[in-house]
Length: 207
Image (cartoon, rainbow, N blue to C red; front, side, top):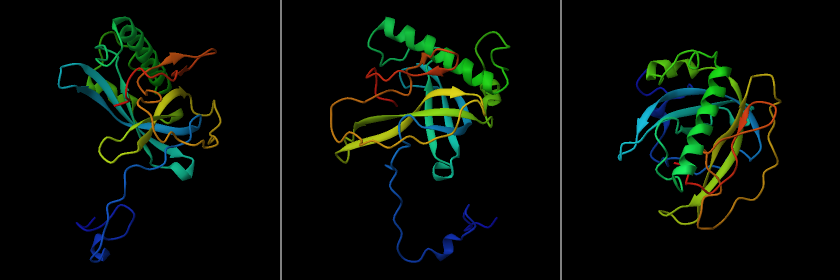
C-alpha cells in the first residue's frame, strides 16, 4: 500500500486544493436498535486522578447503513466511577459493570470468567473480534465548545449472535437543549430472562 493510498481504494493525491474534515457529530443510531457488532479494542485505562476502568471500542458490522460505526464503552469493574452520585451508587454501578463484562465474555468464549482475579490487557484481547448483538441507546449533552447539543450511542445490552434479530428502531427527535445528559453508557442493569441492559439514568455524562 502506497503512502497516499486510502483504505477505500482511492488515493489522497487526487484530493485537489480544497478539503474539509468531516464533522464528528453524526446522527446516532436510533435508540432501541439492535446491531451486529464486535469489540475491536479493549484495554485498561486510567483517569488523571488514578481510577482505572476498562475501555472497549465497538465497531458495527451490520446493518450496512451503520457499518464501521464506532461506539465507545467504559466498564467501571475495578475502581468506583468518580462521577457516581455517592458510594452506594458507585458500588451498584461496579456490580452492574461486572455483569456486563461477564456477559460480553460469555459471548466471546468465556475465557475471562474462567480465570480468577483481575484480567490483564492480554486477557482482554479474548473479547475482541467476537461478533454479538449489541443494543443501542443515545446519550445527549450540551456542546460547551460549539453550542447546541452533542449526541452519541452507548451499549445498553448484549446477546449472542443469532439469538436476537438485527433491527433499527424508528428515529425520534433528539433533545435540542437541556442541562443534563440523557443516559449513561457506563450504567448497567440486568434484564429478565438473561442478558444485560442498562437503565437510562442521569448518573453521569458518558465519557
